[in-house]
Length: 478
Image (tube, rainbow, N blue to C red; front, side):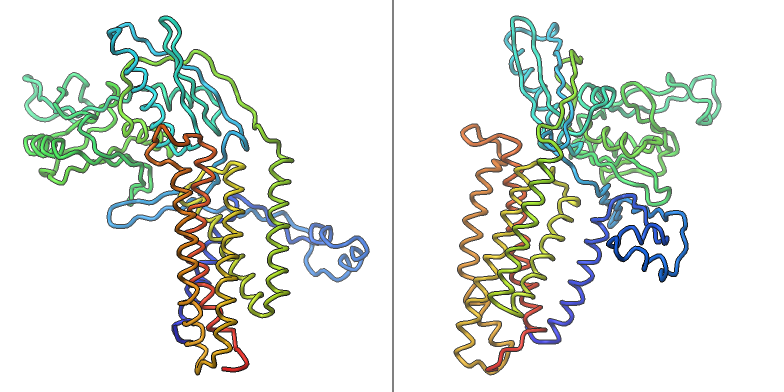
């Protein structure tokens, strides 16, 4: 990497850092530049001086609002509310006991039906964006129950909507009444004017909540399976110029007119949804219907198992630890230590931003995984610096060659160390839910934050550090 390449990379990294900082801002923030507000922030012995020299008068606070992130590209929309998600130990939530009605299911199939209901409810919770949740089953005589621990949700109506609904989707064709001479207007159509087709929610491959590019309103985007694609093409072909109604749980959502045959297997539902409704409905449709009717037996609010003081103390300990590491790097390596401190801060900002973009649920073990990954990023930096110190004694002709040789020699050790840690994180995360490995949500949260930290560590340690050294480091003997 020569100087001009490093300069271009530096500008790109600055843009990334600024964008990351913007995304880290709270959704709503009040800013007050009035004299009284500003002078209260200075030490008391300077307060009178501030009152005399500060030029701005008192004024109403300025409220800044950061909108949610929404990117539409190639027909797909990436949307995030940019809020952190917290686990039960940090934020609390609800524990719900559900009862499955097995009266219409044979005795031999009830156990498998209960497991299927557990899987469906787990998928609905996870697809809604709530990780770190747990769903367990309990059987006593003829009572078949599921106990769901859900972080961040306490309203019973929201819980019932999320895990108890059936969400049966259907497409219906318009049948012109014999007494009508033309197709009726949408306002005069009746539900009885539409007949069911063989295209249902079982033919769905993927459902996503998106935003319409023209109206900016939430919509549901549907992608059918191969079989569903054929059915949809046949239905739209024979209904050109006619309305095709979309029903959800026997309720008509929309009835758009078919303009032409649709062969790509894609459709869109627009029904004046709120963002939360669209998100919940897409999660329910993706997860599928419940194998047995489910009712809520009881619900209780679960308080955070860790108080705010425990969380604040953990974060404070982490900040103190990172600060001491930065001081150590500067004391040991001088200017290179200052560049290392910049890399560590950039790494922390980028990691916290990714927690919002993915998003990851933060629990105390997850926070520990983040702090551990910060320490591993320092390991990468030290390996590079020690190789750099060795190469400085070899008398390289240019700084670019010196830095290139140092990173090349350090890469082997960095690669092996991070690969081993990634394997450990994979085992702890247990993505395939193997029964002989861990299935605890909190341990998985720790593994995910650790794995993400390792990947970002390779980016910052091998690219960001190299850019900064190329631009600002000038060894004496080169």
